[in-house]
Image (tube, rainbow, N blue to C red; front, side, top):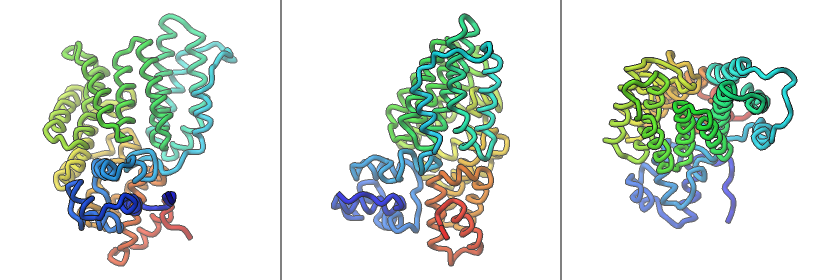
Length: 405
């Protein structure tokens, strides 16, 4: 079979697979509960896919994997289109067996400061992909060595820090499209947190695994992991410390996302309601670098409304969200991209462009790695004669690699 051109848009890929399966537009559209005109617009690039669940539906009917349609092993946005150059060194660090002793006396406090700084960098640095990718191999080695050199309570604390390093590695790998490595890192984070005897940390690691499964289209696996974490956290919930309550809420946020992709509307709002009550109880926090709180719950509500095909409700919620209070660059970027997607569905190119430019300002590197950014920008450029701000659209296209000189 002729290989898929790696430069194809999502719409081109859908058409390519549809034609090779011998399915006409009307038949495929009907199978996924859409109109022929909707699919025609997706394929010719005048309309963008409005939800990840639409990708899953099309992939199922075309008998392909979701990444065969998106062009990479990840969800529609905001994950990587390209392997990051730091991944070989990170992968080597994951595979290495560390025996050598540190050059100086191992210090849990020093390790904790480095882990905190690495997470803070990931959350706040606009150049975080390059900076985090550069630092992760040595940080992983340092954490592994520190665990090996200590015992008792200090060893347990070092294990907590090692679990957090693996959780950061999981997030980096997932966001740069290295999903096998992301799953490996999540598994290790869970096992280490369990050995350390830290239930909220273990739940945080389980949440990272559930997110990775969801992003790969493995919805049942994602739901199973998140529900296991919730059952574990239910014990002692009434008197739970904030970290425990935050992870209880966070596990319900990923459940809301998954139920939304499965079109289970009642379950979506039930999960969001549970997460909302937890957020009201503890307020805006950032336990285990999850940025859980009322704002994050509302951001997930926007995502859920989009997945369930309710863009007007999504936009209504989005207008109430002040994402500037969220400490995560990634979460702010994703929120702006979600708003851009809503305006893209409504064919409001000027508002869509405004949101895309906001997202690019929040994180230029995320913008460079975002398939959703590329797809929305390509769609606008096909209609640029209708844009009042076409020069800005073209500048954005050059910045993110959609246009070349």
